[in-house]
Image 1 (cartoon, one colour):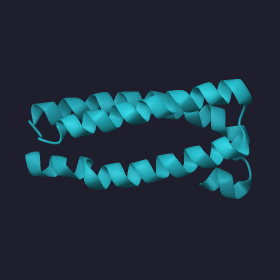
Image 2 (tube, rainbow, N blue to C red):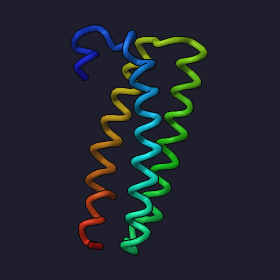
Image 3 (tube, rainbow, N blue to C red):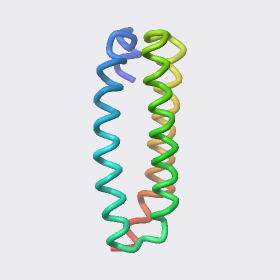
Image 4 (cartoon, rainbow, N blue to C red):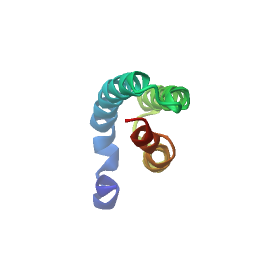
Length: 100
């Protein structure tokens, strides 16, 4: 969001995507393990959502490599990742509290 406001999002997209790809994979692995240990009933839904985001992320990386950091790609990544984080945390991740 900040990079979009400053007009530097195109230049920052590749390093941001690289960081996001690494962070997401590590975070998802850790979170899925915790949900399995806690026998959280949302574990399956969580894993499905994670796989969908990882596929989307791989698609963004492919598009970035093929066509560079276009304005439309920058906006799509920002909108979809922001919405996913907000929706996923509220609808799935918060259910882990009930399993502790």
